[in-house]
Amino acid sequence: MNCKKEHENNKKISKKSIVVLILVVIVIAVLGIVLYNIDKSGTVPADKKNSDTETIKVGDKNYKPKKSIETYLFMGVDSKDKITKKIEEPGQCDMLMLLVRDTSDDSFITLPINRNTITDVDTLDDNGKVLATTPVQIALAHANGDGKELSCQNTVKAVSKLFGGHEIDGYIAVNMGAIPTINHLAGGVTVKIEDDFSKSDASLKKGEKVHLTDEQAEHYIHDRINVGKGLNDSRMRRQSTYVNALKPIMKEKIKADGKFANTIYESINDYMVTNIDKGRFAKIAMLLANDKDSGEIKITGKEDLDELGWEEFKPDENSVKDAITQLFYKQCD
Image (cartoon, rainbow, N blue to C red; front, top):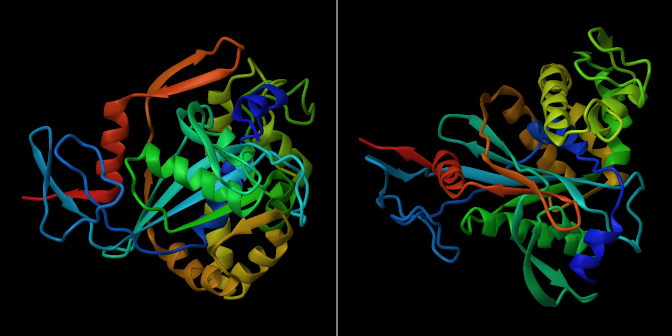
C-alpha cells in the first residue's frame, strides 16, 4: 500500500468527527501503565523507561517522571461502515487524541492531535512489513494497514514517535458510523450553533440552541467543507463543544447504572477496533466517571498547504516538548 497514493485518492471530506465520540467513550473507558524518560534536550528515548529518581530540566524548572500514569490513544476513522473481516480500502484516521490518567491523584488530561500533523509515518505492505518511512499527514498512518489491528498499530507507532517514543498502552478506533449510536445513548445533547450550516443541514440554524438529534449530531460533528468557511479549526471547536456537553451526561449515566459502560461497548462494537476488552472497559468506566478532568493540552504550530493543495500542520517543536512534560512529568522542588 502506498502512502502517497492514499493521500491523493482520499479527496473527500475529512471527517474528524469521531474526536468527540471517542473522547466521550474513552472518558468512560480505559486504563494501563506507562513510565518513561525525557533527556535534558526535551526528547524522549523510545527504548528507555523512567526511573523514580531521575529528574530533567526544562527551562529553569526541574521535573521528575510521574510514577503512575496510563496512556491511551483514541482514533476516529473515516468510514461509516461496520468492521468486516476484510477491509478493501482502510480509511484515514481523522481523529487522534491521547488520554493520560494519573492514578496517584485520580485525574486525567487529554491532548487532541491535528489529523494534518506532518510527522514520520510508515508505509506498509499487505503483511505489515515497513516499506518506507516518510513525513506525511499523521491521518494516513491508519490508511497504511488492514483497516483493523495493523492500521491501529501503525497509528500508535506514529503517535508514539511524534511524542519522543512514549509507550501507548491501549487504543480504541471507532468508525464514524457510530456517531448516531452514541448520541442516541446520551439522549442527545444541547449545543449553540455558531457556524453557518445552511449548505449542510438547514435545521442547524446559526445562533440557536439545538438539542441534537442523531442525524444532526453527525452533521454538527463531522461536516466541514459545506460549513462556514470550511475550516478545520471551526470543526475542532464544535467537537470540543459537543464533548463538553456530552461528558456530564455520560458520567451521570455511568454513576447511575453500573452496566451502562457495557451497553456502550456492545452498542459500538461493530464499528470498533480495540485492544481493550469489555471487562476492562467497564471496570475503568466508574473510575474515569469520578476522576478529576484536568483539561486539555493543545499543540501549536504552522498551518499550510502542500503542493497538491492538502492541508498541513507542522507542530512547533517546543510546543511538543511542553506537552510531553505536562503529560508525563511533574515539577519537583
